[in-house]
Length: 213
Ligand code: PRP
Ligand code: URA
Image (cartoon, rainbow, N blue to C red; front, side, top):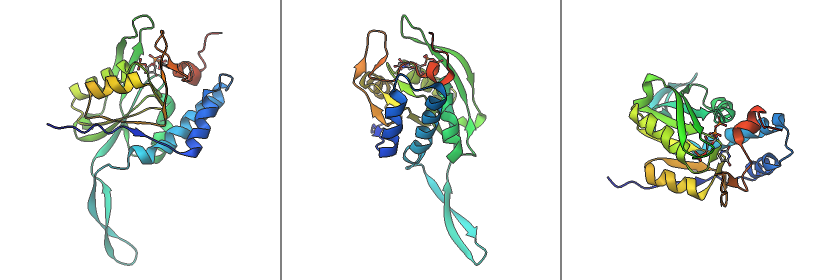
């Protein structure tokens, strides 16, 4: 089957403004959380713009007409922990979505992901599944999470992050060419510790205030 890779660099001046504030190393936790939330919410129209819809009959107070509704249910999948920071922004615009949780932690030495939690709704195999995580670095965590979702029946999957590294895009496009990736920032590269440059540091630590002094 021929698959067209559709990565999308989401560009918007207000998102750029929030990204610049977020990256600042002295941005306090409360503001960091707010910016992640705001950017996530602003990404939703782009991430969902080509979802399939179907025709429905609508009875207005005056007459009957036709409208369109989403063809499939939406399942949002935050990759724990940092993905949780984007969840409410997505739910604000997609309040009927169900939520699957995937626990994935990157080993700091090997940079390999370790899966520690998986709980997904049964509708996974006929839903539009949107995986969310602020950081796509080596791409190992996202690729492993998506493999787990596919093993559990997911077929229509897209991935949304805040900052993508070229290495992460490459890993994902090789492992899952059927999954479109949406990102407002494409950074330069990874450092030796697998952190994105210029990046924003450890997203989970900055969202949850667990940065070591
Ligand atoms: C971070 C981030 C991604 C992963 C990206 O999570 O939120 O899940 O690293 O790195 P990768 O692309 O090289 O796999 P982390 O493992 O630090 O866990 P956390 O969210 O609990 O902080
Ligand atoms: N995970 C993060 O939180 N930040 C990075 O730069 C890389 C992986």
